Image (cartoon, rainbow, N blue to C red; front, side):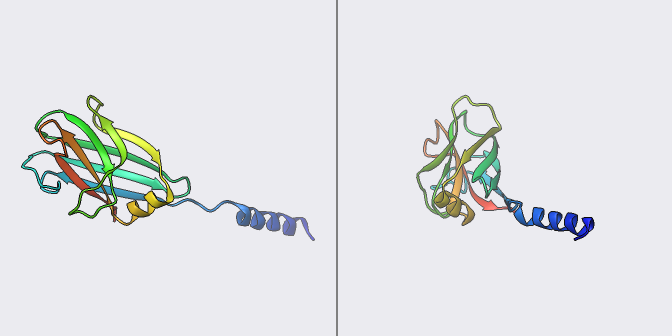
Length: 143
């Protein structure tokens, strides 16, 4: 074997032995009172952007809002539920007094990842005037 053949074989084996690259899946949601369940008359709105690293199962997010009836008392990821149903808290995002935009990370279970990928999570922001939630947005894969 020539030195060139040995080097080429090493490069090929190196690529074959490297770990698979993880997929990063991006998600988004637009929040409003009209999409809350039940709907609110809030003029508030907000956005959610998130990225899921499928290898590490780490979800990273940023949530911003404006125009609410008062200060936010909490914000959460909820699921599993479609856009017309309510569901329990999956991941707390923020509590009263936390600075906006809310930023965070969490490691998901395989079941949580499956529900998120299927569009069965939503984010809502709660206020004193709307304790069950003032604005909400269904979290979907970005196109």
